Amino acid sequence: MNWQPSFDELGKSLIDTTFVVVDLETTGGSPSECSITEIGAVKVRGGEVIGEFQTLVNPGGPIPPFITVLTGITDAMVLTAPPIGEAFFSLLEFIGSPEETILVAHNAPFDIGFLRASAQRLSIAWPKYQVVDTARITRYVVTRDEVRDFKLGTLAAFFGATTNPEHRALADARATVDVLHGVIERLGSFGVTTLEVSFAIFRARLSTLALLETYVHVLRLTSHLLKLEKEFTT
Image (tube, rainbow, N blue to C red; front, side, top):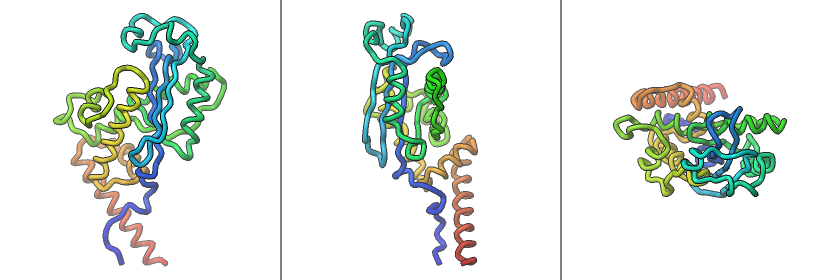
């Protein structure tokens, strides 16, 4: 009988999970009043990039000057870009189905909020993707002693990202990929290697690494007890 605690029966391995990291540039902060100007996405599995997607988007109106200063995206650049209807469906095709893909974004409520608003304007149902917010999950595995804040630029530097975020969609998505991989590596150091256990930890809203270690220990014990129960009843 194997007495070693195991997460084997608690879900899909993070290594085998397909993630699509998405980043948007927009004309402002309100999904109901503003529009998307650029979409960047990176598909990864097993720590490897397996595809990238990038397109400018014609927002259907002028880009505010302060947004142009921030992103470098001008009205001239988006003049011949596809409208959101065309770009949106191309993005969905790249992402794939909710059954095969987990969406990832930094400050996910912003990006996913704009995508949901776009779906509503196009009169289509937004697919029920599971979403990972790297701005949130890093708080469970990185301490304030290690980083001054949880902005993308700070975390990208901390995890040694190969791309600097620069308020352009694809560059920011690439930087977020490196943050995601850093988080997965840290979770692995606690013995957390499955998607379901990861989501359980995030739902628990743990505030310190000590609590994370305790929670993981409880999950391990629960997994072990369930395994023993199965062995004794078969």
